[in-house]
Image (cartoon, rainbow, N blue to C red; front, side, top):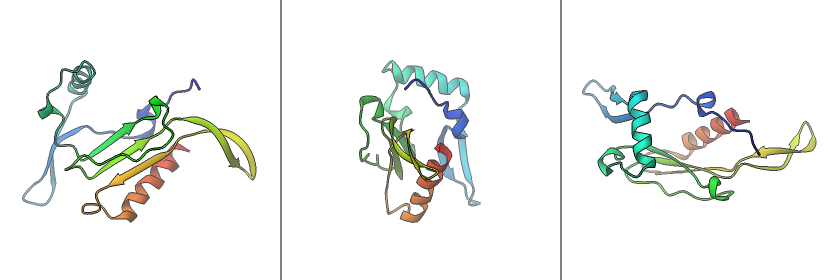
Length: 134
């Protein structure tokens, strides 16, 4: 398969560091600029990023599809609340308008810390994500 998806077409991804609840009950965040994000990404790929720079996240996206895994169960990185596992995009039989057709599909799995997130909101998140991708 040669088609690629641009995440910017699917999601409004915000890179945020040090989100904290302010005394008035609102979130106070320090957003990462596009320039800083590019620089952090380059250093991470080169293996030159410090542990202190990758701490404080709340959600992780992991992709083992690039290594041929169709589906897997990712493990939450404490103290984060959830992790999304993305499997390999492959052509599979799919029912379209009552007929079987071959379509690219991907397995998604979400693991969450039930102390922080109930099952219903986690399921709605996965349902909304699947709907956006289809």
